[in-house]
Length: 622
Image (tube, rainbow, N blue to C red; front, side, top):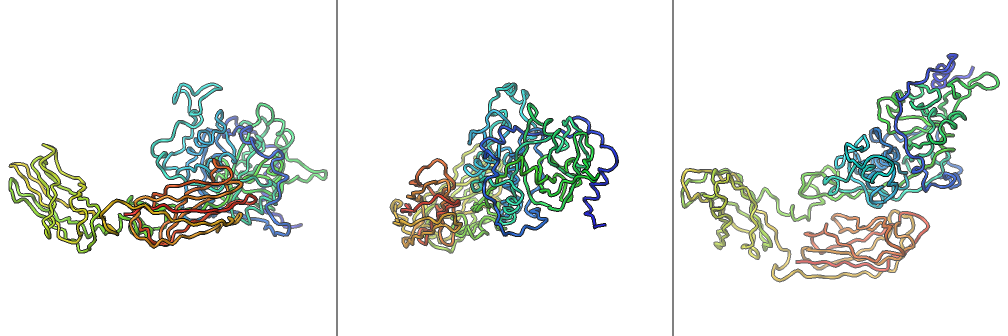
C-alpha cells in the first residue's frame, strides 16, 4: 500500500466514522459576513479569469509555500461586516514587513473604513467595501496607524447616534463617527495602486512566488463550506477548528443563494498542493466514488482570516485564525487583488523624542538631523543646571553663568528658565552678556502670588551680535518672606550662515529637461541641480512640468544629497494629461541651500508614458 499523507489519514479517520457529525448549535460560530454587492462592485465580469497569468509558462512552482515570515498578528473584525477592510490592511502590513522599515506595522482598519466611505465616497449605504476601493483609499490618501484610531468591534446603533437605525442611515453610522484629533494629525501611510490578477491557482502562486507578497481574495460566501453557525446544512466542527474551507456542494450553493447570499474577503498567504480533505454532502456525509472510496478535495491555499483566534482555525499548523481554502473555490467564486511593496520614507522629526524613521536613532542622534537647526548646537553646551538659592529681599540677587565658545552671528535667541518660588511676583530676571554689557529684562515682578517661573523667553536684543561670550542670568527677589531657587536655565541660539542684515533673498534655479520618464521602472528618472549659493533656507518650493497620459502612475521625490528625501506627490488621480504644479517643501527649512538637489520621478505602472519637460527650485534664504 502506498504511503499516505498524515493529513489525508486524519481526514479519513474523521470522515469514515459511518455517520455525519451533529450540526453546530445555531449562532455558535456565526461570524460576520459582508455585502456581496459591495465586494463584487467594479470587479471584472468574469472575476478576472481572462486576465493573463501572473506566472511564466515554464516557471517551477513548489508544492508548498508560505509567506508567514511577513505576517502581522491575526485580528478580529468583531460583529461588523468589514472583512475586506481587514484583508486589505493585512495585505498592507505584510507589504510593509516585506519592505522592512517598519518592524511591527499596525495600521488602522477603523481609519480605512472611514476613508473609503468619506474620502473615496464609495459604499456609503453599507458596512461593506471591496479591495479595489480600499486600495484606492490607501494609495490616494493613506491611512494612519492603529494607535491613532483603534478599531471598534461593534457597529454604531441608536445608543451611539439616534439616526443609526433603519435602511437609510447616515455615513457616520457605518464609519463609527469621525476621526479623533489623534488621527487627523497623525502621519498617513500609503501603498502603490492595486490591480486585479487572474484567480487561477497557478496565477496566484506565480504572483506570490515572484513578488513574495500576498493576495487579497474576496467573493461569494458559502455557509456549509465555511462551517458557519447559520448554515442550514450540517457543519463540521473539526473542519472549522482546522480552518478547512472546501468547494461548495450543490446543496450549499442553493442554501447560500437568494436573500442569504453574502460575501467574504481574506488574505492568501501560501499554499499546499498535497493537502487533501474529504468532501461532504449537504447532510455532512462523506462523499464516496463509484468504488466506495472517499472523494478528496486536493490542493488548498493558506489564508489569514479576520475572525479572531478563539475558534476558527485554532488547530491550523500555522496558528489560530489561519485556514485552508480549496483551489477550486478560489478559482470559481473569488476575485484576486494585489498591490506592490511601498517605498517607505518616514522622515525623522528632530525634536519629538521618537524614532520616526525606525532606524534605531532618535532626534539629534539620527544622522538625518545633522543639518536640523534643533541639532546644530548641542544642548549640553548651553545649559546650567546647578541649583542656586535666591537670596530673599536682596538687590544683588543670584548670578548663574553660561559660557559659549562657538562664534557666529545670532539670528535668534531663546532663554529657558526654571525657577521654584512661592511668590513669583517678587522676582526680576535679566540676561546679560559680559563682553559688551548687552542686557535684556526677561521678567519684571509679574505673576503676583503664583508659584514658580518656568518659561521660555524669546529675546531679540542679541540678534546680529557674535554668539561667543559669557552670559549671565541674574535673578533678584525684591520682597521679604517668600523664597525660592534657580533650578536651571539654558540658551537656544540660532546662528546666521550669511550676513544677518537685510531680508531673506529669493532665488530660482531651473532645469530644462525634455526627457522621457522610464515606464514601470523603480529607479525612475533622476535629475540634479547643483546650487553653489549659500544661506539658510527660510522657504522652499519645487515646480514640475510633466506631460503624462495617466499621472496617477507617478511618484515624485525631492532630496538634498547627504540629507533627507521627501515624497512631494504620489498617485494623484486629480490631474489629467500631466502635472504642472508648484509644491511647498517645508521639510528643508533651516537646512543649508548649497549642495546637490535631486528630483526623482518614478512611473510605477506599465503602459502609460510621459516626459519631464522641466523643473525648478525656488528658495528663500537668509
